[in-house]
Image (tube, rainbow, N blue to C red):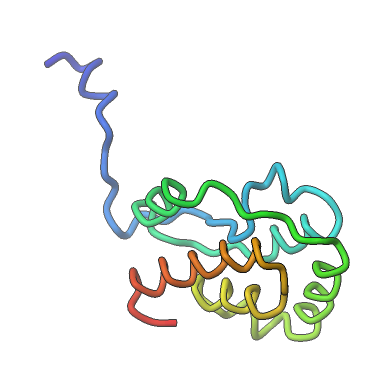
Length: 122
């Protein structure tokens, strides 16, 4: 097999290789006001293999109403140091609890379940 064909094959990186995961994605939808602030605040490092798998199953997270995002942002700011220490599953759970939008919560619940099963904790 030529070098050209070898380079095009999908490679599975080791579990130790990490990616930045925006819990509220896609960034192009979460790009204004409180949506952008929340998107940028809720970023966690996850193994590349999990990150790829998650995005294969969940394509985007719906953006809730701005008033809900503002209320969540204010709560986040009040407890920023603690919340920033949360792992990806717990951060998604915090968002689930604090942003009461049905479609958004469905996406957060998917991520909570996905990462809790991969890491074995919440």
